[in-house]
Image 1 (cartoon, rainbow, N blue to C red):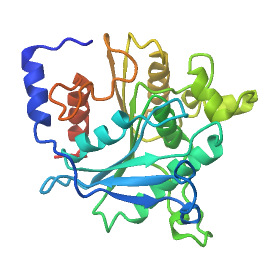
Image 2 (image 1 turned 45 degrees about the vertical axis):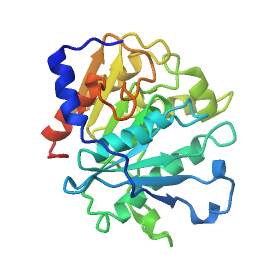
Image 3 (image 1 turned 90 degrees about the horizontal axis):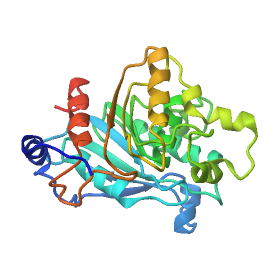
Length: 287
């Protein structure tokens, strides 16, 4: 566990004390043609609108972790409630999972989610659109930061004509590499059991950063024994090399999968939540 002074804990409590369960959630099917499929085969996006009077005009799409074989609720809905309480229109992505589905379908779901929110930006009063993920969900978020496209202008589907590039990314103890410093189970679920070297390189996202990669906020713990902190360090290094702004926070203590570090109503969250709010405020993404 991490240790925080009473003053830090009090400040974090004040920041989060207003969180309430959001009653106005709405779920959208990403692919209408899959609407009648089983739940596991039907990716969705669930919207958590900002608390009344707090809307900042920022949206964040959340990719829960779970080694690409499950979706952790505490890295999905809990994050959405936290973000909505600070004026962000949050969306939890239920993406398809391995081993039935692999990188083609999984990345298509995440790209589609960004396109859908961007297509409806005026309806939802959204300007900036971010992507957020934890663990394997962090790999998916970093994939969207490095493998986006500008949309297909010839597509008959108006959503597919829209860019899939996020405006910023938030990576929580992320898997970044598909190589040796990554996470074996996540790689097997995402790429299959025997991926070739070219595919491993393509989705080792520390190798795919360019000057077009959006700014990012990253956090990890030194003690993480499941996904090495080297993942966040390597991605931050690549961002620096390409002059992409970022914030990196490495905390000494804390296990993998921490999430907010507290259960609802989140009265004692991990300090990363405070640091994220500082970063979002500095970038004028929240008030």
